[in-house]
Image (cartoon, rainbow, N blue to C red; front, top):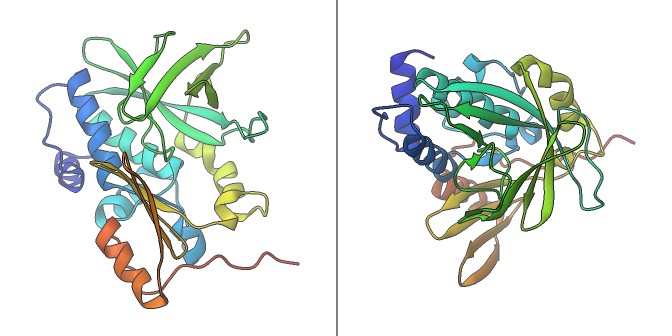
Length: 260
C-alpha cells in the first residue's frame, strides 16, 4: 500500500496519519476502523466474489466504501498498519461456538502488531462485537475495554485463547500466516450450509454510544439504555444501508435457498 492509498484509507476511517507507529496511534486506528468500516457479509448474498489479496481488499473497503468479514477487514487493516510503520503478522484462529467446540482451521484471522518501541498487541477489527481497542498480546490478566473484560491465556500446546467476560471467543495459533492461507476456509464460509455466514445476513458497526446492525430487514440499535429493533419495509432497506453504513447498493441482498 503506497502513501496515497494509505491516506485514502485513513480518510475512509476518519483518523489522521499518525506521527509515530506507537500504541496510542494504534488505539485510535483500531477504534476509528470499527466505527466507520462495517462488519458485513453482503457479498456472499449479492453473488460477488471475495478475493483475498491486499489490492482487492483495498478496492472493496476504500474504493467501493464497503466492509467485509474477518479475512477482509483484518487483511486490509494489517496492510494499512504496515504502511504506517507497524510490524504486522497474520494469525489463524478457530472461533469457539456456544457448545464450546472450535470451528474449522483458519476460521478467523487476527493480527499480531508490534509498535516501533517493541510492544506487542492483538488487533482485531473483524470479529463483530469485540474489543474496541487492541489487547496487550503478552498480558495474561484481565484487560478492561469498553467492549467488555478480556483475557488472553496460553494453552498447554502453545496456542492462545481469547475470552470476553469469561467466555472463550476464539483459539489463536501463534505461527504467522499469509493471506492466501485463509482462502480455503473463506470459500467454506461462503458456500457451506453449516456456515452462519452462508445462512444469514449481517451488517454492523460500532457507534459512539453502542452499535447499529442490520440483519435482513431488522434494524437493531444497541446503547447503554437498551436495545431497539425495527422491522424495515422493502423500500426502507437500501436507504438504511446508506444512512447507517455508508453502503450504496443497487439491490437488496437476500439469503439464497440452500440446494436440496
